[in-house]
Length: 279
Image (tube, rainbow, N blue to C red):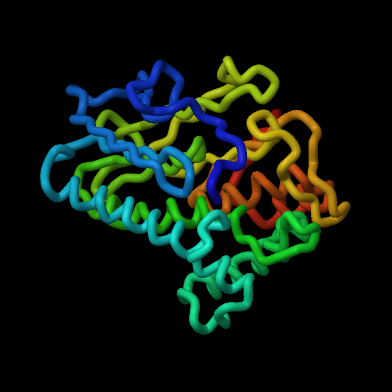
């Protein structure tokens, strides 16, 4: 959980055109909405929260952002594999039973089992350890899940749209009073890196709401585990998945990168709200 799977998106703080957080050129509101950004290191990665809309400098907005970062820090405290005192590591050392951990640990176990079934075995929460065995490690789903949970207070901000960038995986959302199209919509452009030349953007996505996650080897090499072969996957390329939640976008991006044709068939038939791009 300390590093992103494969950062697909350029940093969104004062970004160039084509980077996350950049409003789409058209359609545009009559006057540009207010904008503010916050960045904090959480889960071993830079996480940025961007707000656009009315009152983004106000107390309510600042309180919502603080609550969002608090959720991310809570998830890190529970699931980090780099903190000896996390619930996950204490559970793996058998110092505590799962009943004495945060209820979110049991929920992560359930989500992992659901993801394994949905992806026909391509996604797993049993990952290799430094000792060569397999241990419960929900790293592959925790980051997206944490960002989804952190978005809850931001969704309460009226007339405000937000973009959360967690090490390159992105969630865009807005209060229900904002339309998804037309002159009053706030649209964000998310740029996806070319895995063979990380200096260029391969394509862009325009989102008023939705998540973008990418898995591949360009940033970290062969670090994605294939349960079928029991090996790390080292081939070049990437898979980007977009859809309603970052949890499942991230799960499917990993599964589609390491999985077989059977996993791609499962995605086509059972993930109707999600789409993928293979580079």
